[in-house]
Image (tube, rainbow, N blue to C red; front, side, top):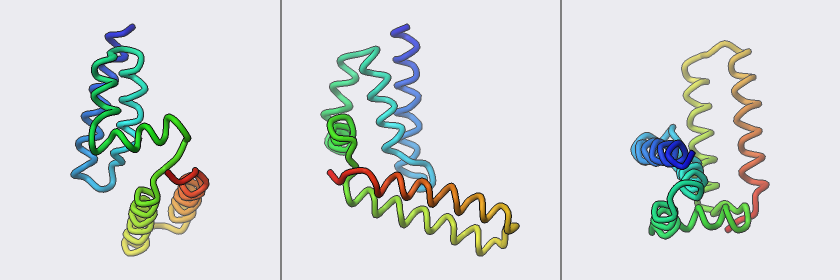
Length: 117
């Protein structure tokens, strides 16, 4: 089972690294998932991830307090607004826009309801 958790952790890190370069693919949730997987498979990889200078603070904030850094909240909000604006510019069908708006608004409510780190 440790092998499966390790593989899932590595895949999550891979997706997270791709997300650094693709703004529509979230990085931190994949790193949180990787930390979860590595905690069950490899103490060394888990320690590396939570002490990483870029990803570590966000992971520790989430693990310890369920908190999201204010900067991350702002970036997420701007990204969500940008994505919805693209949908509007593309002239998607109203039903698709409604579904997207409800989903994205729910995500924003979740993000902004978390404590700030």
